[in-house]
Amino acid sequence: MDNLIVIVFGLTYLGMALGRVPGLTLDRTGIALIGAVALLASGRVGVGDAGAAIDMPTLLLLFALMLISAQFQEAGLYRVVAGKVAVSAGSANRLLLLTILAAGLLAAILANDIVVFAMAPMLIEGIKGRGMDPRPFLLGLAGGANAGSAITIIGNPQNILIGQVGDLDFWQFIAACGVPALVSMLLVFWCVRLFWRRELAVPPVPAAEGLVPRLDYWQTAKGVAAVGALLALFATDLPREVGALAVAAPLLLSRRLASRDMIGTVDWHLLLLFACLFVVTDAFAATNWAASGVEWLAERQWLPDRIGVMAPMLTLASNTIGNVPAVMLILSMWPIEGSGPLYGLALLSTLAGNLLLVGSLANIIVAERAAASGVRLGFLDFAKAGIPMTLASLAVAAAWLLLGGWMNW
Image (cartoon, rainbow, N blue to C red; front, side, top):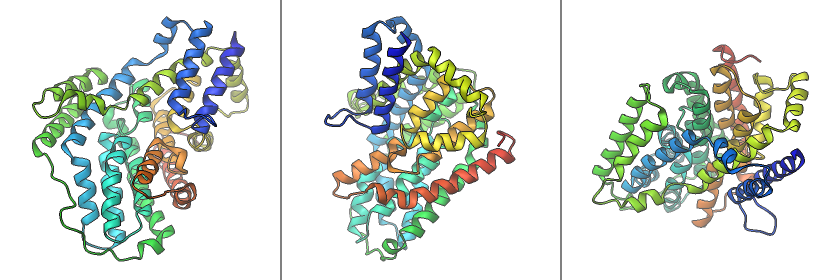
């Protein structure tokens, strides 16, 4: 019985690494779904076991946060921020810094994937209209959003999962991860500025009038109030997912924004990916193969419970199978004791996603949105600044975790 589970697990995570099946238009979510269905159809996993494997509190929290972010998207906040950044006065370097800061700070509260999806088209239009190459700014958008999302538990999907599994305190998480995340945003700026200095040397022409769209102030105010209520509830004993749902649900009561449209902005593909990977990884974690593998790694002191192992492991895993599947796999295989290693897992997996174009979903989203706007952001384009910014960020994060006593080397 274990053999089939191992095969399905191996093929599923190979699909996570490849991103698709050659010759088919099958993405990671489809691959994970087929893997989960194969286990159910073969009888290796029962429907009840599959349901028990799915971490519903994590999915509910992620769903609620997507609804809150949808409020800002429907209000036009992301487009307005991107437009204002693009038309700002000053040099190209100043525009790059504003792009990184805006993306990073928004991602810390409203999730990196949604932020870059909404900001990229308007940013491209504004930068192209000023006679500049959009690519370094798109790198700043992705890199800044990834780095900024490491500040909080709700900044990205893997942090949400880690926070739920470890029952981590929202504010203590910021205290542990905020400083290296902010420093990493500056490292993104310095590296993009250095390795794209020729493109950034072009002075921007005056911005065209009327580029920045109008902001719906009332809908934005509702979103801000929702975020404030969310943070207040995070300081109580109410389960985080229940508090988030209690805040998100009233946002559907609107005379202007249709609930269908808001619910339609939810990334159902990501939620389905989570659910299916929960099933596949839980089934594998229960096999003798998994137990033997963990024992083999433990004998060689290769378990990811210290920085010297966790950092290279997450860098490799995040840029092959992706940081969300990597974190899910680690949490299912190695129950981590104590909050310190969980802070390290969140921080290092997120920052490692800036290495290559395939390192995080946010990077892929930026590249796809760029292609739709006629801009090609290739693998080498991303790696040119992505590799140095990631190595520098990981070094800062490792030093911070060591000095703070959260993890050992």
